[in-house]
Image (tube, rainbow, N blue to C red):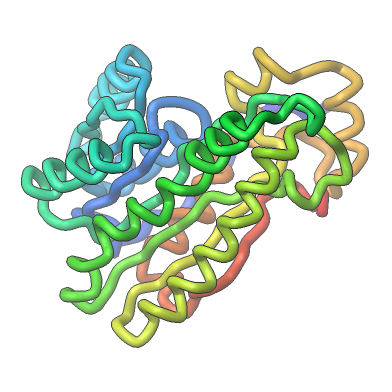
Length: 264
């Protein structure tokens, strides 16, 4: 019998339009971000990513090189809460690689907390970590996209704000704001041919999730809620992002796409 919790053995699409496209992923060193970096690299894209985790970033770049991709991903170690440093890193990468055709705003932190323990400083940290840098990364890459008359921005949201549970209110509230950024900027950029969409993961089986938050009871409850009765994996999540980044998604903008196994 097939194990319903095993990663699927699947053959995924190749997108000719992604070959040579310059892609920037924030928070790309591990988890969902690393899955997207690897999948874009396999498409022949020129991939750069930003992260704070130097060792994991180096391991990921080496892993992609071992796969024989045409362009080994490059990265900068930067704290995205520091907007000036982030925008400077983006400028340096664009000078090195060329202006970006695709931006994936991914970096976030879903540490658990209760509403009672949230201080004003922690509230600011949750918004700075999970929302603010999305806008300022767009501000850094969009001018070149608008000038060339095309581009795709994919903001990674979260289904957490749809959950009626008190795991992490600061995180969930910040993530709800991602949809506001998407719809506002899609309307602003649409006349110039630049698309902006949101992709929302459900519970994706990343190393961090399995190490920090997994429990038998929690997984059982999640699978009970999902229509597809197995784990969702980073590589699967990346496929929706690839489609939206490619020319195949050219008619999609201002939309919200769920990759959650039918949980919501």
